[in-house]
Length: 288
Ligand SMILES: CC(C)(COP(=O)(O)OP(=O)(O)OC[C@H]1O[C@@H](n2cnc3c(N)ncnc32)[C@H](O)[C@@H]1OP(=O)(O)O)[C@@H](O)C(=O)NCCC(=O)NCCS
Picture (cartoon, rainbow, N blue to C red):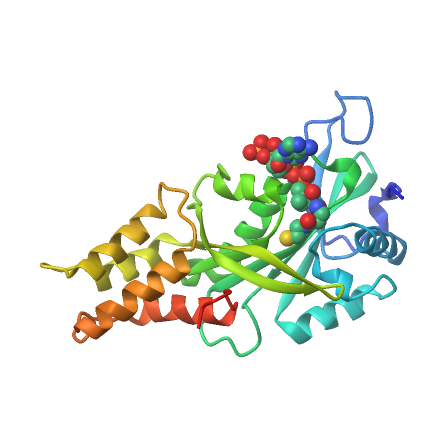
């Protein structure tokens, strides 16, 4: 059953919506000349939320709200999410004149889980584009909004941004997001999720912010590096231009060998250790 989101009056909202860039027209209907905007808000009415959750529950996709069910309120959903980790949920609408139609949702968590010890490792999750609005480039815009939100929230303390997905379409965007001012995502490894009682493997990606990556590099700098440190440098350099996979395991293996060699006896390995703690906490499959 395809969901038809009903247009809403913008006055139905709390006034907390933020306009993103112009949509360029034609999402609502055939009038391509009409100006449309993508707007984002943290509120949703109960009918739209129920429809969204029902649609999502009936679709074969890896989305954690299948574990929440289709009957809850926004407050219950926020409680459910925040029991897991501190999370904000954003609803995206296309707005023309006074009318708004919900087209997408996405969330940002400040950290992987309560108790994760290192601030500045954000998690993007729960993205869902309403089927009738798919294939029009909305995913990249929802991604961009959430990245900017992370930067606004953490500033220079933002170290990394994580997302997990089994979608080939998301993989395409993640491999080449083309968002100015943002580095590329690396493929960390795979994680196993349980969605609606079924175990699913998804690809885990991580974007390392330049200052954080620079600190990691500093720990690897120095003359006469042993092979394991050279390998580690290569593994990290490749993240900038190559479609390398399973970087998490490569960093773990290189780090263990370099530590055994004594490379870190006089160097600060804090940032690499944070990265490995993150990989273990995800947890990446086979990351003992
Ligand atoms: C995965 C999902 C978010 C993608 O949304 P979308 O609006 O269709 O994605 P976009 O239109 O932004 O396209 C993303 C990429 O996939 C490609 N793509 C989209 N639809 C496609 C199609 N029908 N055939 C081939 N490629 C397609 C696009 O070309 C784009 O890549 P590009 O920009 O490099 O060209 C959406 O399908 C969805 O909500 N799925 C169900 C929920 C889900 O799986 N969520 C992920 C949980 S992490």
